[in-house]
Amino acid sequence: MSTAIDNFTNQLHDNLEAVEDRAKSLKHDIKSATKKNQAEIQSKLDEAKASLAAKKKEFDDYRAKLKMQFEEKEAEVQSSVDEWKASREVKKLEHRAEKAEDYAATSVYLAMAMMEEAEEATLTAICNRMDAEAANGNYKKHS
Image 1 (cartoon, rainbow, N blue to C red):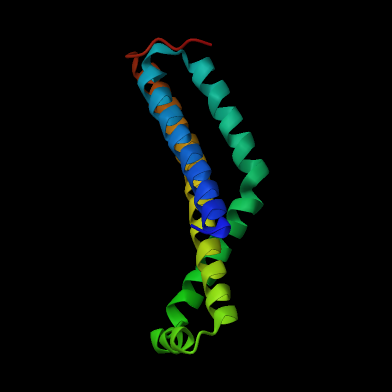
Image 2 (image 1 turned 60 degrees about the vertical axis):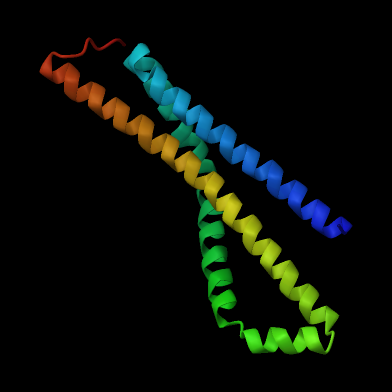
């Protein structure tokens, strides 16, 4: 494989591992939620909200970039690509490959962002459920 492909796949692998680690962390938080008091969960939620707030513009930029890239990808005509291949228009094919790699990377970055949003949403749901159960007398609220 070429160095460009190796670099791209290594970076993609690292980013997917980060998504997987985030999913495992979320899974652990969900499983351990019933063992934690509300103050502990609220603290974790506050951290998640602060992290999301700090990255909001970055995440919004990823969403906008992905939308634009998707529209460009949809507009690409296969017949043009076939012509580029047949006439060995390397520059155009390289540009196309770079755009595809960037699209893949942006998709993974957005997945990472969505994992952070899922974590915040899950912790919010758990806190809200604890509030409801405490109000109903079914859950002993710890502060």
